[in-house]
Length: 262
Image (tube, rainbow, N blue to C red; front, side, top):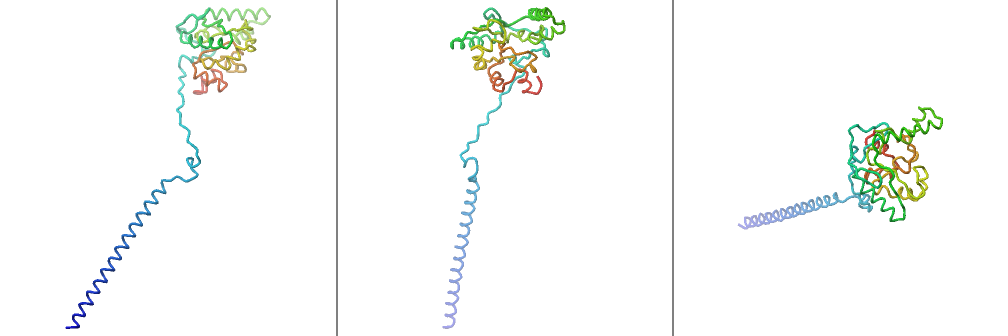
């Protein structure tokens, strides 16, 4: 009888030990699981942190991406007229009187603002020539040819010399109404003396703000086909003018820069 009771006690003790063992194993599994989850969370957080040598860590703020301005090459402001690009016979323009001449009505306001701004700074600028018809242009061209003939040049040589400053009818920017010849104090004639005046210096600094460029800059005749005319200005629009001036281009170069060939 005692041996049987002793046996039951031993079984009960063994069962209690097994339960305690199982409970310890359960606790270990729980701790391991929690450690694993914590480690996984830590790794996840670490993976989202950029290395210290990234632009942000260095204090470098990425520049804002600004879309490039789309230039409409075929817009009225950028119409190209020269000996290689003659205006069509049906070309027309809405003109408005400006002083003693006429200009494209769309450039009247910026032209007036430019002249007024110069006047506010004590600089007098006047427009002596704007729009010219084909017949008027041909008359000027023929007169220039006759001048060189009178100087002893051959007829062919006279035409070449005349075309360095004056184009035949249809090939002149003056047909567009977008070009003007300017005069100022101390430069009563259309010659290079205009470049020695305060007006020219002011225009070099400010004309682009009003959409105008010096159409035939010095040293650009290989592109324009026209020798330096510091008095001749052309409206191309403010953004185009500022781009042309900032890059030291003439209109032909600017148009070529847009898509490869004017």
